Length: 123
Image 1 (cartoon, rainbow, N blue to C red):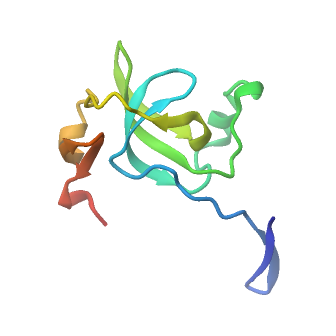
Image 2 (cartoon, rainbow, N blue to C red):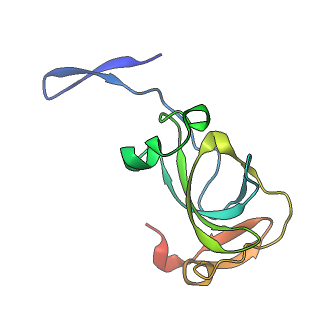
């Protein structure tokens, strides 16, 4: 249920409160496509371009009002950065590290299916 809030004298409908299921450093897997990745940033709701959103086939398009995760991702062929909705992610239970060249610059140790963020990148 959405609540009305007032900002600068105008009534605005507040979006529903959502909670991120994953945190920075978690290793996750895409539910449909199977690629794995490490969470390095989280948007509480969709924060990419409308063009990107519209490029997703309509029957697969996720709801915008949920957390979206920035991942250092890998598949069997390459490594890349992915932007994925919470509904399309599951925890990765392989206990294997992710092979992405940017991980060592952002994260330190890997243990218990989680990377520890280097102190330089914490805020």
